[in-house]
Amino acid sequence: MFVLALSPVPYCNWYATCYVEGVAINYFFSDIMVAFMFLRLFYIMRTILNFGEYSDAFSKMLCKSYGFESGLKFAIKCHYILKPEQTVITMFFLTVCVYAYIIRIFEMPYFRSKGHAVFDSYFNAIWFTVVTLTTIGYGDISPGTV
Image (cartoon, rainbow, N blue to C red; front, side):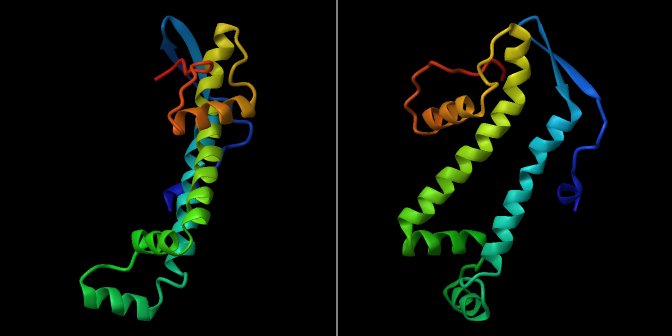
């Protein structure tokens, strides 16, 4: 309930100051709330998979007879076995979009305080996320904070 109740408060300009390498970074409270709001995607995915075709009464009975539980992991594995390409591509694109936005939220204030506009563009954050997730690691864009 707490995660579903999260939302940025309008006109709330609270900020937290962190110091990284002697540089003061101001993170706004509303930006941090938006980052935590992405946890809602997990609940949406879990709801869709829990009320899907692999979570009906027959699936639960069959899983119980073989000694394991019919849950989120079982539904993802079933989707992966039946449609591997679609499952991997969907999960990859969702991961890239979400992580790129979260990285942009937390890295943009650091680079703005240093006078660089690296993560001001969402496409740069997508590029960084794809290069990192695919373990290519060109090194042209790198994070400045932990």
